[in-house]
Image (cartoon, rainbow, N blue to C red; front, top):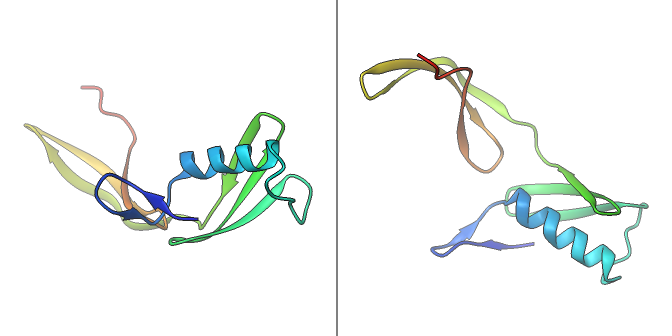
Length: 99
């Protein structure tokens, strides 16, 4: 499955994966090898869409912590984040931004 943004190919999009899986199963475009589970290859690696009626979720590569408790300056404030590799992008997990 390929995911395209306005600029380029994306390695992964969870929203698009769930939507495509729901449509494909609902319309009978694909027949899952295992009931309710679609194994899908993406640029970020394999992912599994789990389709149960209108409820769809997915399982993909596990996230890897790159830098725990990394200090980041936002405006005049210093906050600590965990930088993680999600399998397709770097994300910052912030515990609390309240003053």
